[in-house]
Length: 191
Image (cartoon, rainbow, N blue to C red):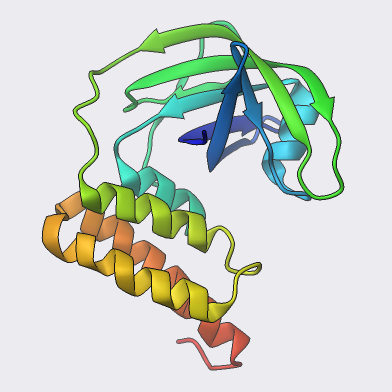
């Protein structure tokens, strides 16, 4: 099972990187499998730590993929790093082992500290649709355009029926990213 989270990691220069990540859990550990190359991978290998935040604000997922800022960060307690200020819960992680792979190594992370901040009210269909579109956006260079467009059309139904203001904003950011990506691939002039 894959859980959609936000991972914050820090470079050796102290720069924070915020990225949506599907993680797995196994035997009390968090497994992160970033593609090569990625800032998250480089940062975790260098610092040996990361922070996992759980959020129901889908703007964070969309913003991280579209170079926008939709979050505030707070310092963590047990590892050197930051968590989302407005998150439901967070976990502070240290790297235990790496199983290397040419495409997606697995990083096995041990939970050093866990904290619950807010109750989870549940996702509505629009939030789930934004998360699904965010996954597609994170793979625009790997997926056929037809697949992205077909899934986008299907997910639009949930947006039209159940989206609130935050979901509409996040959806718009992701749609802009998709349209810009395909326009650049087609060699169109983007104003």
